[in-house]
Amino acid sequence: MSLGFDLLGTDGLARRGRLTTAHGTVETPAFMPVGTAGTVKAMLPQSVAETGAEIVLGNTFHLMLRPGAERVAALGGLHKFMNWPHPILTDSGGFQVMSLAELRKLDADGVTFRSPSDGSQHRLTPERSIEIQHLLDADITMSFDECTTWPVEEEAAAQSMRLSMKWAERGRRAFRDRRGYGLFGIVQGSVYPALRAESAQSLTDIGFDGYAIGGLAVGEGQEMMFTTLDTTVPQLPSDRPRYLMGVGRPADIVGAVRRGIDMFDCVLPTRGGRTAQAFARRGELNLRNARHRDDPRPIDEQCACPACLNHSRAYLHHLIRSEEILGAMLLTWHNLQYYQDIMRGLRGAIESRSLELWIAGFEAEQALGDIAPCPTKP
Ligand SMILES: [Zn+2]
Image (cartoon, rainbow, N blue to C red):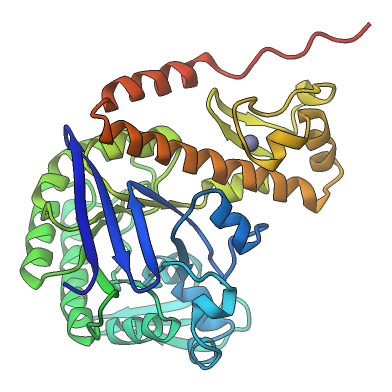
């Protein structure tokens, strides 16, 4: 295998592991901040690293349209272009083509679509997606798949999944194996256990460096997502990393780690950072809310991010109300820090085989809700 994965320990179904890529190692379970267009929005790359993140995600769809994969390659690859010398995973473009592109036409061979920014026509096939990710120099390349809609009938989910499996096989053939680089297959099949099983079998027959679970966190709800993981995860090879795509809220991540998932990505901490939403040990809070206007306390007294070390809720509230850029920067940093703190906590708990105790503590704190508002000054 060209991508290293060492299983360092387990606690129940949860795994403590280490990925070895061409651009460094990644301790798992890991959360990957989303760097859509070659930037984790509102963060300097070194600040992203300071939170403890070891790998970020880049988007094929966005980067192929602007600035273009060939241009990024000519400039030395995505790591150099964005000054992120650490590992990068790129998605295949499949999800964004279905959700963002205009006038898209799907056929058995691929998708033709128009750019939402300038109307220019483009085409993505399994082979072209793999080539673009190669040009970007992604450490981890994702198979090009068709994004199954939600909700979906079983027959339509089956057709969509089987098309994605054909594309996965074509992508595997197009992928150039190199040391430190890997290709992940994506299990589809919506919420239908038989389809998930068929998809997992097809992918393991082809053979990938890692296995992702796609098509979840699309509106099915946490309970159905966990049920799908319960039946799907045991069908994936235990010696390869498992990645749950697009998940999620802190409680979703904790529940999925408990079920044996190793990798995650989600826009929530970064998008939340730009929309006044903070994730914290005692749940989610909205800094735009008037209850924070006179509050001299930080978001979270135990958090070591610059927002919490140096600034009050009152100041963050003021920045957000004034639409100051610094508000989005500080909140994004806090959210990414909190997500990485969760991952560190989970890794430590699996190592010491005390995951259930850690989760009980996590859930108890989340259930407390935010600290009571400051008493109004006389
Ligand atoms: Zn903080």
